[in-house]
Length: 459
Figure 1 (cartoon, rainbow, N blue to C red):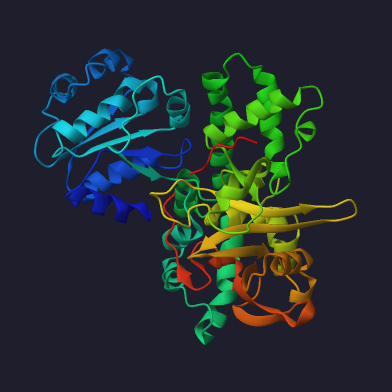
Figure 2 (cartoon, rainbow, N blue to C red):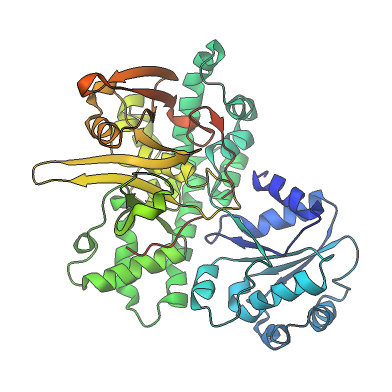
């Protein structure tokens, strides 16, 4: 299956300033498959070494000598890994952190050899910093689940082609709208995990996709032992099971466990963020850019890795989602918020660390929360996921008034539109409405091709 990151890899391969490429992302988002398919499409000889199966290679990588490393790998594979027209792929590189440090010397001493590395639990190795990080000597590619656009292009290409155009205000868009909403509901069930998408593409069975979800969730639970660091595995499993039900809600540690101390729950959630099973949407005052300058990492809400996995874990299947009207789909629960957040995480492309913020004001009698806040050019852009009249967007109105912002974006179940919304005192702001399925395609009329994974939270 094709991924948007294919284009990034193609540009990387021919770049005159090419550096070793380090792919970051959760388990089973398709990192290894992406590299294998890329090598095949470019007619490159793929020299793949899974370091989880060859932990003994740590000593040769510790030499930091590319020639010695390549000689050892050539002996292992039975061919010269330095040969013209080949690419070296070091998979599960987090198992041998010495290999991460060695990437610097491939860049400096063997720049003509394309080197790609990947690791499903890479964040843990990077966080330890017990080795010399090759800062400035490597490139990153962040990969997450398949976006709705990627999913559409695979399972219903004619809809995917229209979606990619990003024109949601034409008469043609009105004709396509019902079919795109139908396909969106299917994506909410199947999700974007590549194996689940492939199984659905081959069988057209959501039950088959659900079976893959069950396998993936079991794999993540099995992974806990790899990074538990002495923590009680039963406690980790209990917290993990509760996360899908808390998507889009401000984290209160007591809601995850009444028996564990808050600092222990926090530590477990941070581990899940490092494993990229969750992403942290962090509160920001949003008085200006960058948004991270005014963030409060003690206040955050989680997103799950994938909307299909989330719905499976919450027991929401095809029948339940299909029974909802389009407006109910947007307003009920965290399904639409998870979907939009999952798409917006990668709005800056796969070369940038995925991140996302929201705005929250807590008061004695009422709270005000805007689902997401993103950067658009030099401006702060509030983003709401809501259906209904613009006048009902109380929190958005409050934020627009306090911050004196002039533009906001709403995703809902209707067609694209633009309106001027009156505020107190005669002020106005421009509210652009986009159909829900456009979240991964455009923000305020500008095309965004997501790259892909997810940030570690400190909350």
